[in-house]
Image: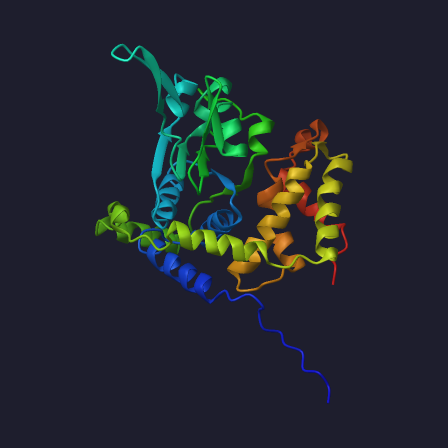
Length: 325
């Protein structure tokens, strides 16, 4: 008798599927459209990564971040970046207590589970650099003492791509710490009509009434399940080929680092789990290539003069790489 081959998922993602359905139902009460943005935020949450959201004013970047943070039953903090913001305004500072004759460390707003950094490019480089250690190592160092972030810790930052007055370009070292850079476009006519309907009945202002769907313990279990998603050797080679192509391309001045390869693999595992699969496929990598790479590479001066965009170059590089089957 021939052995029957089972194509069922070896990891039970029924709990994840239920949570994802509940999150989409809750966010759908406030956000019209933006399915791709929501999926990428969920993917980053499962992959334990930070997200940079870019879009013109008025496309609900901040609202989307707040709604997604509301889905997790955890501490939420919002920091409005401004040109006069100091690192101590984010990380906290040591305060002298005359009564005891000693210094006491007072934690800043970064000590939360989900930290929304609004208009991150409004603050100068010194303040932006304050996020380097905490984003990478989930800790900060003050007066020689280390303070660990509570689990989980995720930074969701927003920035405006068209307004440059009073803004500061994010350094490459900081951009590389974001798992994804998500671009939010204008809504369709139907979605914008739905936005008007919801504003008319006051639904947009009710985001704080949304019920949390995920607890911290549940998120930890889901992340452990995501780590078990299978990444075939051919998929890993595909990822290495994609990232390597950005370093060899004459169209790019700066290629992606090995951190991009890790981000593509971890993102593909989380995105596969989001689709109910316990294995990755090339389409997962292709779908996430732009969100992972667009902020990690820089166009050559020749390509910039030609008016080419990073998305276009990434697409051209992908088209020249053989897709594993």
